[in-house]
Image 1 (cartoon, rainbow, N blue to C red):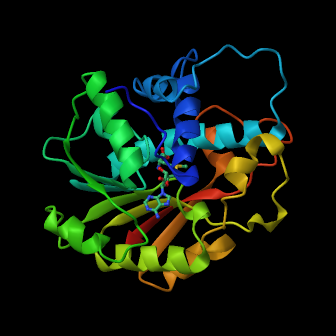
Image 2 (image 1 turned 45 degrees about the vertical axis):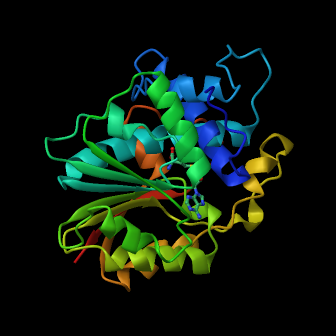
Length: 271
Ligand SMILES: C[S@@+](CC[C@H](N)C(=O)[O-])C[C@H]1O[C@@H](n2cnc3c(N)ncnc32)[C@H](O)[C@@H]1O
């Protein structure tokens, strides 16, 4: 069967744009990471990689692409540095880390996302003959459905062991209440020493209108907002935030002039 993203909801389709950015980065000279599956996802979705045709990309398009590229590299490094043998990718989308990262032996990783995106992903990966580099479990479902923690435990997740959680490109699509509910559930499953990687929420009310990106920005709700760290600290996490400018400088990719990129990447540790 030919993989098709037709059943994917608007929020799930944002995963396709992320894959496209990863495909571009992967074929640059001296890429920050190589995702050998990203181009396959984009192509199967009818988004073939084209050479830029001379059209000027909007500032917001460039900003979002740089954000995705830097956060991918940063989270790759922090996931491997975390040293946990349980990994959960919340809203995994088309993240191929279970296949492309060099996980220590014995690592168990679960991917949670809505069923259509995980179906599409599996079809593309199977067609490519991909084999995971860790023990990978897939849990299709809605993270707003309070039953997901029970389903994760039933799938073999051990809440007594330290876990590293990744919520990449997710919370901005959630309201304050939804983000709080999800992160409360994550906290209840996190043994001391567990880590949570995610972006800081933001005030999305001032987002510039860009018609080419309205299908994405209209979905933004801002998550826990600019004081995501305060919310986490009050609930048993110690947080450290690295700004996107710091990440760009650390990876030798300073931010484009006037990119208007704000925000940061949080690494929270459960006390
Ligand atoms: C921007 S993509 C990010 C995907 C992936 N984390 C990455 O960075 O490649 C957002 C993802 O969130 C998922 N998502 C949004 N709301 C969700 C929900 N309520 N339950 C499960 N997944 C959800 C979408 O299906 C989509 O795959």
